[in-house]
Length: 285
Image (cartoon, rainbow, N blue to C red; front, side, top):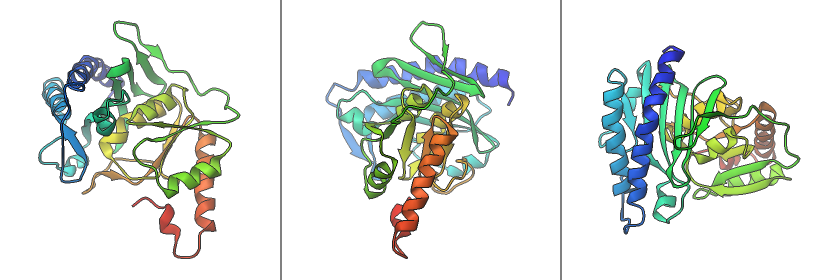
């Protein structure tokens, strides 16, 4: 897909994402009830309301592109085999949403040949919108304001700000954080962590745990467009090709390649220090 169409699609997705996010927000404080899905993750009426708005909107705006959403009733990860696909997370950070927090987002990603080439992350509670549609084309936009380009990577902080999931903390995360000291650790939900790295408000997003493709594709597109890097903890490029499970086995998103290298070196050293047979303790499962 050429740059012009990507830009056009994202421009059309912005009001769609705002509408979906605002619909979810309207349901947050009305006695939110959750049920548990087959994969043991929670889902609420807000997830489904946002999903319906996004699904209908994407099919109208881009009828030629397959859509894969977290809230599809029959997930078909074979859609990832398509040359181009849209990945949707109608409400990323459902646990935070249920708890009444404001760090939940709506995610839309355009993936081409397994590579996220455009992304949109909208955090309705704080009216924070981030989007990208190509290299050095990453922006933030407040309601009714002109989009502002995200800054290129700055000089590194003496103590990097490291973001980790509020809901997923385990031995692997704690050991890596110890290895990265001195650093400042902040806990946050949803893909907002990617967006804050892209915006230079944080330096590293550390995620040793597996995550689903719709959790990270939009954020990856924005980080990379802003000059950052997203890699698996083995140093591999994170791609979104055909997969039965639709999972990404852990990653690091960093403002610079140097910061990513620091995390990868810490991960490698921790693996090397473990007794034989225990390396799986630092591997995503």
